[in-house]
Image (cartoon, rainbow, N blue to C red; front, side):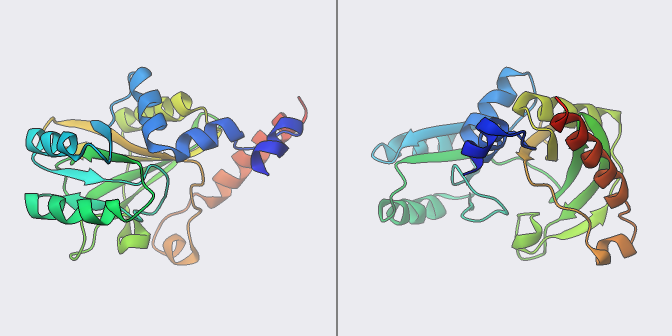
Length: 223
């Protein structure tokens, strides 16, 4: 339906960019081609598990991710051979044909979420993983924290958004302790607004975000 509507009426986000953002392999390829720092990634057919084993031995630690999905759902941290050996029989019972993994980025288990609307920086906050999980996603037990973005982070988020082609984006960024650089982990096409509870402790960007989205819609519909 979304794709069909996009052919006949203006949509925000546009369908092509939204679909690209939803596909982890395609979006990482787009980011890499645009010169945006992103996580190292690898894909192989599930009937060739030896290729994933070889990549595990090269990286030492990696993350399995479904090609499509959000909120950390379906992800698995492969930090030893036992977890890798456990994953393979599970995958063989699913209809997953291709196995997609990313090099685990050594970090402090916090991230930056940068909101961009129409190419402009709106806000930045962070997420912190719980003591029981390595994922920062709120749906996986992470908590929202106050965080400031410097010019380097804002520029990275803007370039990532442009590379994907989204009008509205939430860019997830980690600091890679091993390589000492910021890395775009994901570009989201449905970035959330601050909840009343989050606004109460200082996340005050909803009004500006709504204003910029309204301006964007007005301009888009007048074309």
